[in-house]
Image 1 (cartoon, rainbow, N blue to C red):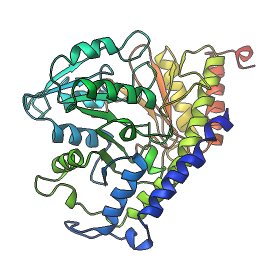
Image 2: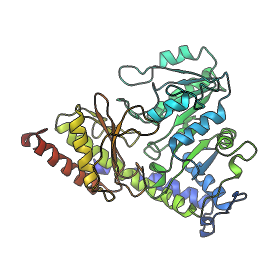
Image 3: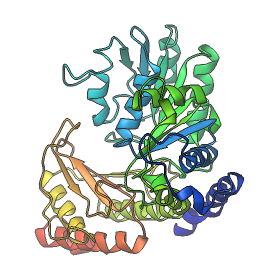
Image 4: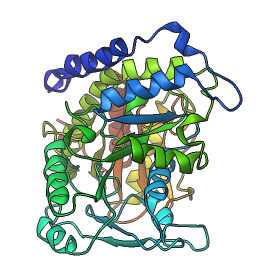
Length: 402
């Protein structure tokens, strides 16, 4: 299993190294221009390297993006105009996008507040995109179609690159000017190709997920067609400034080094995800995906079914974290989320999900979402700690553990 997950590391690492070589990255690119950041050569090289890795015409990699949600919001607000139509074809988007779109909350300046029309297509019972419904929806002009690559908090398979390619081809065949936008969070470097290489016009994601390699201190990115990337940057900064502004605060080295480390970190996280799936499946818990199945993102979902057991597992994971092991994760509200969350995240970078972490919305059926992991041994130790806690509390018996 581990051998299968690490088989593609060399291919992905070579892709990263080729991008570094093509852009002639040197130590001089570690420094930043202060203030406005105009003419920052390090930032410009960083953008070009990321664009090559993602197979995009252009990219904007910025510490000023607070999160993946912020990068996605900048892209959506940058591209969409009042009266235009946006269509989500992967069901209800991740919780933090609901207020961006205007599905929750009022008076915050959502897309709906600005007159953008939003519709979504429910997924099929299998969790796949309803392509017949997509064809019907494309009878109406759409400015942008949203695809969420990761399962998020949904119990469904993540979108494979082959599926994204087929969907983009289908959409562009019907509406050539429609923007195929992919929320790429948790999916980068999991497969050999990236969405811009298979027809996606624009993608966005977070640097404290896959591409940050566990050491990027903050930030996000947008990548795709150059004109669309610039529109997103005009929302991040201001019209007329766009991608030409924004200091890197002398942190370009960490972003470049994180990208170099990313293929290995992603591979370790995938091995950890398989291990989580195998252990909980053996205990009788439903898992998505199963161990050994093809993966398109880092997230491993486990249906725990009980809030007390969920909290117990998160407490065990937190207790073997390198940072804040003494903390007791308790359910609490979090900005952007519809439900209280319980989170285990004793990570060096606050909120990093490229490091081993787990979170769960406190709502039925009480699913646990595990992601990240810098090395498989940490995941093994966390699982042992969780199993011991479940055994002690009577949630599983010794016979089930083998």
